[in-house]
Image (cartoon, rainbow, N blue to C red; front, side, top):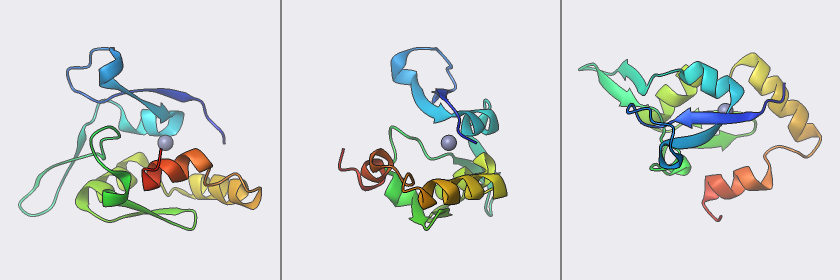
Length: 115
Ligand SMILES: [Zn+2]
């Protein structure tokens, strides 16, 4: 399923201003809701989602084929709560990869931070 980008409020202050928003696909935006992260670990503590403006993707996540692998607790929370490796998402990525459309050049640039 292809989806349209939508806004993702990156701060709990929740103001709809440009510096407080990031683009997110519809499934991620719905999965994230108003959450900032999830409680995990021992002792249990709030682990934030990967922050698209403040964190480097490659520090927390790694693309392995069509699967997004977490490298850190931040990556783990992000992958698990946003459902980044659900069956439907993997099927979509496999279909896009078979057509040469995944990962996109823009996504690779973001992952590698060449943009
Ligand atoms: Zn997404």
